[in-house]
Length: 109
Image (tube, rainbow, N blue to C red; front, top):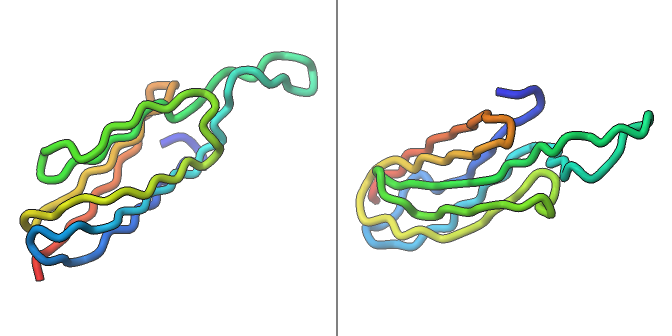
């Protein structure tokens, strides 16, 4: 994992079967657009999280493609229906080839 890049995810620990829950994610990342210059006038290379996905028990919940205009430390909030107990898998893809993952389990109450 690249220095300073840290994903954070908030998922309820339990839900009723069929309930829609709110999921919140944030990843700490500088998100360089490739259009700024450093002190010497050199272009700072583009480095952004270009894709975010979430799966529940292997099934796609959300798949987002990000462009250079995305803000630093991208935050996403979305809803997902929980049909059964299982695990959410969150993945962020970086331009430099790095992949950041987090997993959260949920039980049925």
